[in-house]
Length: 100
Picture 1 (cartoon, rainbow, N blue to C red):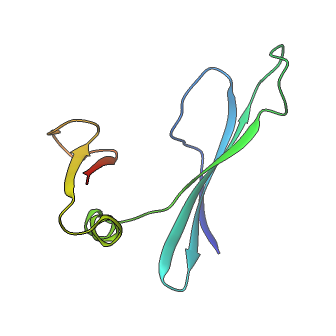
Picture 2: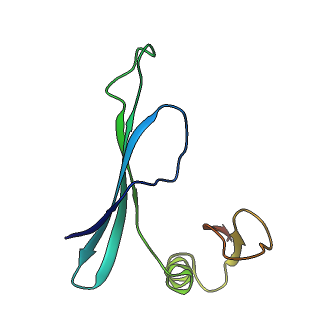
């Protein structure tokens, strides 16, 4: 089920004509966030200018546990909010670095 449609997206630019954002749900809650982009590609000699980006929402704790299950508890796991060791405020995303 699609529960919301917004008009914002992750990427910004002069060629963006529209962005449809959909949050997909299943019986367990949100399971996918989809951004459908339409770009003005006039004069670029490329295809249709339509593409989608899908994101799978995870909690920081849940995704860290998933990585530990794959790489083992002894793997060195560092979490970098917004590619930095420390961020003021709420980060936009987290980067996980695993050294095994």
